[in-house]
Image 1 (cartoon, rainbow, N blue to C red):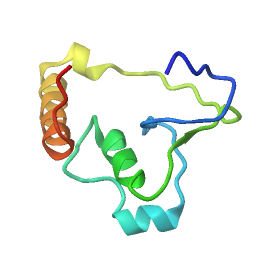
Image 2 (spheres, rainbow, N blue to C red; image 1 turned 60 degrees about the vertical axis):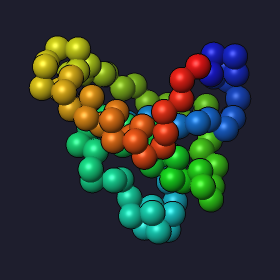
Image 3 (cartoon, rainbow, N blue to C red; image 1 turned 45 degrees about the horizontal axis):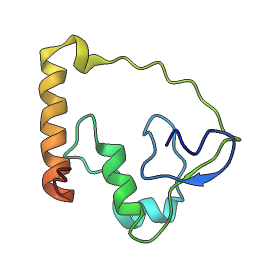
Length: 98
């Protein structure tokens, strides 16, 4: 989304689970985050489910600093968890080859 910039509100495909707001009635209706994702892709999955009836919006007025741990880059265990989550996500939402 580099073509949009960070200075204005815009619709985005997914939001980081590190910092997102959602109406509680929407979360309750969807059942919250899918517990099959231990880490990774749970935020993308939730955004896809939200987008079936609502929009996901980037709001430049809100700011947070997220210090990524990058665990999947440092640990085989977290790399494996990443692969499992990716497999679950793409099996659910489809594989797109360009």
